[in-house]
Amino acid sequence: MDDLLETAAAAARAGGAILRSMRDRFGPVRTKSSSADLVTDADVAAGVAACTAIAERFEGARFLVEEPEVYERAGVATGAIGFGDVWVIDPLDGTTSFVHGYPCYSTSVALVRGDQPVCGAVYNAAADELFTAQAGHGAWLDGSRLAVSVVERLEESLLITGFPYDRGRPFDVQMRVFGRIARVAHGIRRDGSAAVDCCHVAAGRADGFWEFELKPWDLAAGALVLREAGAVVTGTDGSPWTASTPGIVAAGPHLHLALLEAVLEAQR
Image (cartoon, rainbow, N blue to C red; front, top):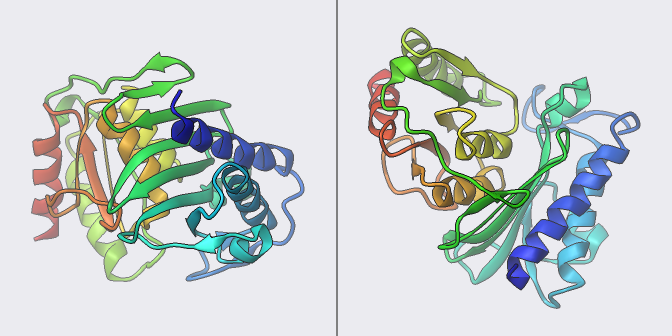
């Protein structure tokens, strides 16, 4: 395994190990942007563990982490998308699920160069599964190569989505899209970790994924896993996906256009 990918995997596992150890003792639950946007001591502790695993291997590494407390506690430097190499980390993707004991939460780690991830790892801590990908070298689940499904029609698909913390207009837009697609698809799942959602599609467990209002740390690793498994990945407006794109539509090459058209139609 390449040193960078090995480091991403080690960092994701380090963060995930903290999550597994703190499942029943995550401390007080705090809120951020809204009453639905939660953070716990486990988010911060997992972030420190992930950053430390990288900083010990790469002196001077820069980071973009969801929880700002992590920078000082881990003693690492901040970075930004578009300015050299930056390690983009979501220490606990799926905090709401974690708090409620719902088994879908992960640590997501990616190295982003410019505006594209070059390697990434998603550790599905609840299921003890490690997804990895490196640009141009495929996507893997614990040593087995991944490939997206060959489903061609929404009417034959199982899809995944998530809902924005902003319960105003962004939520209304998502509900229109959800209603449009739910009328035709086999089903729609919502587990609360965008990183894991990406990996489920990459593994062929579901056929497509869309979501609005996401951050770089939500998608940087998962989007690369998707691409390397053969998915078409765009923004919700159909534009090419980058690490700064605030949404995603992803599916196998036979289904992506139909899913994107449904998302676009419902937004009009």
